[in-house]
Image (tube, rainbow, N blue to C red; front, top):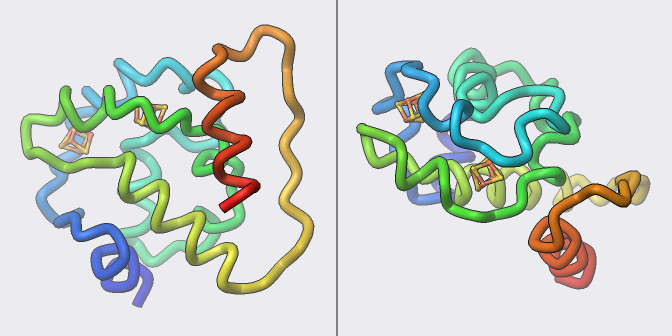
Length: 117
Ligand code: SF4
Ligand code: SF4
């Protein structure tokens, strides 16, 4: 099941999330995402594999803001990483990301790290 796989890879308890939305409210990349961080959790819990193919895990700048805001100590940064790992393990070689000039520098650096492993 998707939720168990994500928990295994991330080490996070996603069932602790009660959808307060604080993570999404503080996410600096939220405007660029197709699913907000709290929606990502919800999709995983529902077993909706659409989340694996979404661009959100690749847009995530790994800034840890969401985890520091979460009242339940859910570290979404690690969950995003787990989703990327699941996608990469499918060995699909078409991940595309359009770099925008107004992206924060941290997002560009983190994206480069994702592509270079
Ligand atoms: S801040 Fe934590 S509890 Fe609230 S929606 Fe985000 S992950 Fe869930
Ligand atoms: S780690 Fe990712 S999801 Fe969390 S606040 Fe930063 S950009 Fe948003």
